[in-house]
Length: 455
Ligand SMILES: Nc1nc2c(ncn2[C@@H]2O[C@H](COP(=O)(O)OP(=O)(O)OP(=O)(O)O)[C@@H](O)[C@H]2O)c(=O)[nH]1
Ligand SMILES: [Mg+2]
Image (cartoon, rainbow, N blue to C red; front, side, top):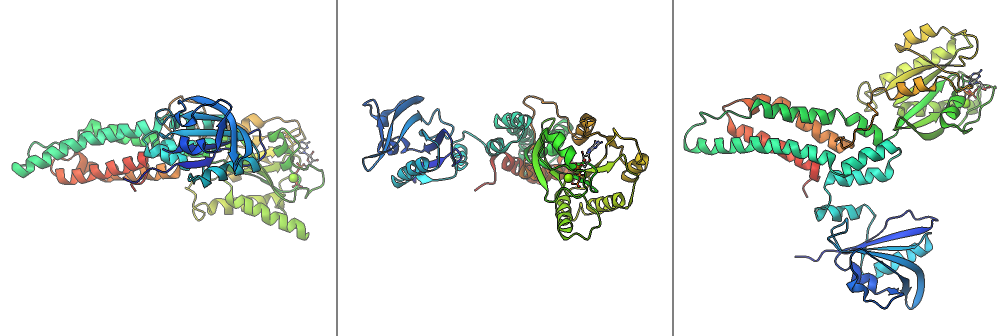
């Protein structure tokens, strides 16, 4: 058997900061670090107990590199399932890199931080879904996202998938024994899977699939583009949402040139909000370039706030906006979005001024009720926000399994289709061999979902 490797990884960002942390994990972690570490106390670091902190210095060729605090964990206690040393040195790039190089020169294999998760998986500390959850937690944008992902890290989704596997295992057993008895006598008496099992399996998969758009929305901020003709108040809306003067606002049309984007949270759902240049016919070269950029941003948008000016009558420029939206919606399929994934929310701004706009016409042209705002007075945002997240139940349900990656979604969709296609075979009573093949295929799909692709 080949000896397991000892890995080293910088787990904090390489930039200025109070602390930089390097994790060394593997059978030689303690002996390797002991070669460069001198404790303030004269103890044998190789025999360090699990869960202890050690204060001292890292040396290279007799020269002190940094003052550090080490944390040792035995393989029974560490998240990787290997002996583990955390080296807490001063933050910054130079000190961390020198210490890291030093550990590397002693034979540790340097890896990115998430490779440590693979070690955890190999040692049965985490499954693939939990590993994906950790990766997403560090990238999460909202408190709700972190809470939901922590639940998946704690095993909520894995347990739900395991329940499905247990049901399949039951079906599998019944058809294995039927297949065996067929060899000796006949299939008479073989009943297939019972309806309750199929219903439980189908409902379980469907319940998980129903969480896909919520889980994916939590992990990937949806691009939300503010679109409208010049001067309707797009940048003022952006600033009101961010509660800061981020974008330039001016009474002259054509103020915004480059787009401005920021990440926001609406009831815990992250969005990347993008303020764009106003769209109109113009001879100005720079403004035309800005409008091109607006269309590029529109192409990648999931949702659009289509802004109209309450104090001006509907005109050709507003018509241009509606045409752009029509094109955008028509491109939904071509751009690889699920039908219905793109949504327009009509927003009537400057509602503090006397109305000159036919808002009923806008609602009917966009087939959506309008949101009325006064961005200047910061009125009307609650309604707009609830429209942005209305497809989701944004209340937090502790411990609820949620599907949160495209990989998980794809495998669950495969399982759903297979059960649907083979329901007759699964509930029928005459073909245990075929039923066995189907249950094994289902087992393979759900196992891959929990554990990842077999190597
Ligand atoms: N009365 C009133 N004025 C507003 C409101 N929102 C914006 N304005 C004013 O409208 C003018 C244009 O606002 P901007 O936010 O720069 O408009 P814009 O759509 O970003 O304009 P461009 O970047 O040129 O396309 C400014 O003078 C704002 O103060 C509102 O709700 N009520
Ligand atoms: Mg602007």
